Length: 326
Ligand code: HPA
Ligand code: ZN
Image (cartoon, rainbow, N blue to C red):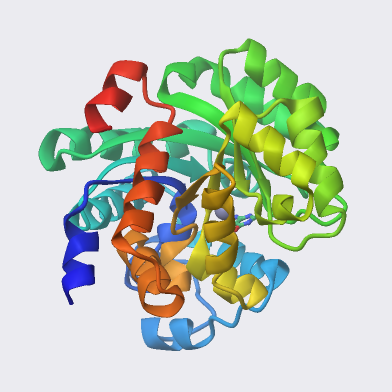
């Protein structure tokens, strides 16, 4: 109990959360009814009971199906405001949130509809709840580089609402270099760069090398397998690159909380952070991820403090805001 109070009370930042992964079953049902969309199950409980993830593809199939209830600006607003309310209740003061525009534009929902709803929630939450947030636009790596480029161009009128770009979805046979041109253009447009290097993927070390040497990322999402190569570890530490680790997500997709890996990163001076990834699906927001490390991997107060300090430290806040939190 004492450690759980300690976790609750610490000011926190979250850097790896997919907004579409915060869509709670109850809101899914409300939106399905409102929008006349048919869900595969009859109750929120039945929907949760069907959450059967054992790897990345089995998670992604359920995640993309469920987001079909998101149609109108108000839907994106409500999802985002609900997440920010929940995060603030856990004493999260700052978050960087991913969104997947192609998962919506490919269904006929306009980019403008998606981003306006999200933006309105961010402004209102900053004002009314006192939680600061920034948006990171992800490209779906199992779609074409051409589609990613179209999405990048569509985002340019909203550039001041987006701090950076990322890469998510199915990593198998979709290496970082597939998007080299898109990310080079994103950089010239002033966006920060990150990419998912998911856990235990095919060619994982090749992919991590590409994000470091070809893409030139400012951060790495997951990146657990970098531990397999000491030169890669040394380089990540030397560049001060943040790694956004998602313990409970990892427990679902690779059956491992990756507590040992997080500890090894800290020992090597790598800036590991803890995050929730898709909290509505993995049924764990940031506090529950930290509690899992304490309860199931024996993390100490000092280790938890270091992980949270790292998150503010590698965040994409302007320096004065970052120092305010540090
Ligand atoms: N990995 C890849 N793509 C994703 C994830 C993830 O954990 N969550 C949402 N899209
Ligand atoms: Zn993710």
